[in-house]
Image (cartoon, rainbow, N blue to C red; front, side, top):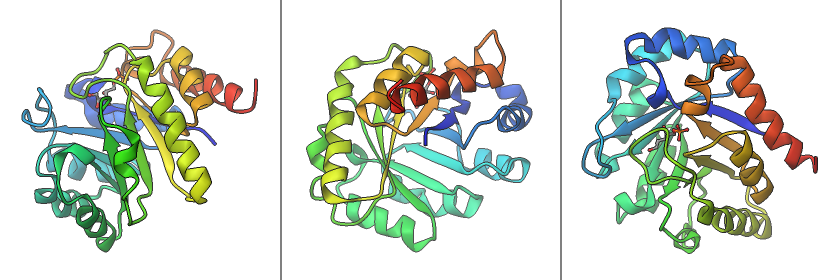
Length: 224
Ligand code: DX5
């Protein structure tokens, strides 16, 4: 089942609440909040307050994608603000195992994100179950970038490892996702697609944009 997660990085910051509600009404499955600290990535965006303000406005699960270092300093605050899933970067902490345990201890889903040049093998020692692996298909920091096709084998490798181990874990992708790349990443094994500009900049409206992504991905996933 393909899930679509609009990324609010591409939304109109003067109307974040309205846009969150609009993508919920348009069929989004979850909302991704791209938290950037200007140090781990070359941009600064939202903080805990964005999650706290959006929480009461939508029923959608909120994913806090922490592109920050050290992520450990922020896990509790995002959990308390209402994030359902907290995604931290493999590259941002030497203590990934402990950080994932901490997220779970707070009753939240834990995601681990890999930048484009980080090999899938770094997850092999992940002795604690994470709920989601996020494969960045652009270098994190900005919306509207071009999809990096070299990430496709990594998506395939991660999906294969999960299947071999019988592990239940979502494979999410983020960056440059549009109907064409949605088909490619679904074929490689992704089941959650994060999209910013393909949704918020769509001339056809949010519902059509979300539908186009889902159909492109499911069409493939169903062997279409
Ligand atoms: C990239 C962000 C992505 C981005 C995706 O640094 O973390 O979530 O907003 O935007 P698009 O879909 O426009 O590439």
